[in-house]
Image 1 (tube, rainbow, N blue to C red):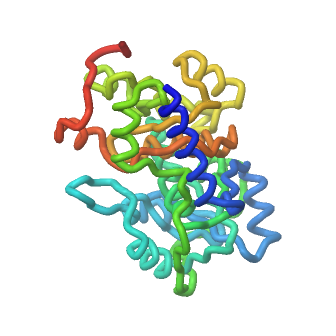
Image 2: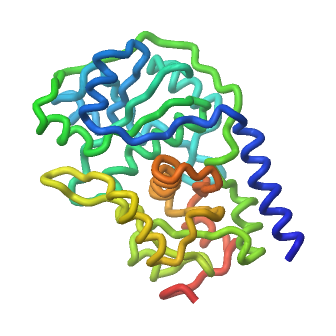
Length: 299
């Protein structure tokens, strides 16, 4: 037991060490706050994560179009994983991204699916954070909320001059590699494991001992867009599912996108640095017979 506690402490310490004092500011801002930043700050880069078609029909001023499908890598026959650094550097350089800029990221699709609505942006935010960017904000409500408030909308494409983006380090407090997750599974009661997929997927099979909290449950629908629920409501979600946000957590899903939502909420709302998104897929863990699987509710 003492050894387990020591390892958990060591993992947490190492994540803090590699992240250092350069923790990114992961925040949530309103449409009005986003508008103010765009108007008053020169070093702001706006990222629209919707499809190219929807983007071209209207987007925020100065917004470039970078979708989750462009930040994908196939590693060890697993789809939907974070690309290697050299691939991220090429992508971000082509889009003109800079490490010292302030970023506003928004979504605005999947109006019938709250998890997908926010996952589009959360995945991009996690890629920016993983690449060492320090100031990243999610615009709550997305494009439809912006448009409904009569804020300026531009039509057509907008691009930035190409840059030379380099990654100096990857923070240790975001992605949990397979070896880390397997260690946690084999050493029960050290770090909480949370399944962020739908309830149906969870009941059909999940990692033994994993708790459940659907990524889409962090949002509520107002008019025709999704907004993040109040902090106290989200706290109650954690309590209901017996998840302690004050203790280390690894979240997983099918591709890392929904689990990146869990990571984002933990950072942006609760400022928790000991929450990781699993860099892998549940499907492949299951296929490789790497983990014990339970069917039905947690037991």
